[in-house]
Image: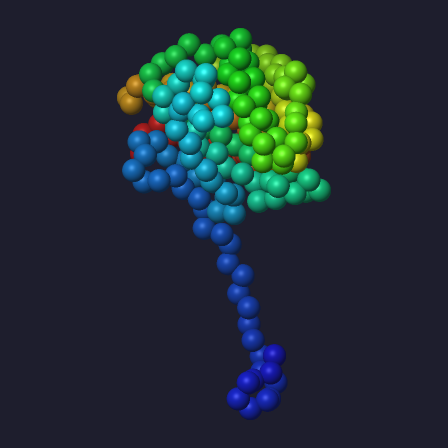
Length: 196
């Protein structure tokens, strides 16, 4: 680099600092953290694009850095916490219906934004229980570009007895489960605690 005052060459040291971790708002009863370069969104139930989902509470979403880049391994990779009031019964059939409403509504929103049409009959959810309060799903849905994609998803249900809430943690990505993004998403879920 050249000094602007003297025109003489000058050494410059650049220091690269990591992103500070993301933490949910301190006013929340619960706590979780994630990578600082993941973008966050918060929505309240009932969700505008899926008002038939019968919950009250919050939906917190964390999106991988290159979520919008179709050529990135992070494409459409994200996590979600549904912080739900009460202790609803959550089973595979009920969760399937809720995810179907969620992704059909989201697909319609994406289609409006892209000024295109989508066939909602192509949006589907196959879900199986894999352990107590743990589910694995394959979700066929539309991206914001109007393209049909398949998301591999895991969902874990955690009761938070002290606050009379239930949490459903989702990990969703088109990537195979052996890819590094799954490790990052698991770490976000593992950071969750019901009470600060």
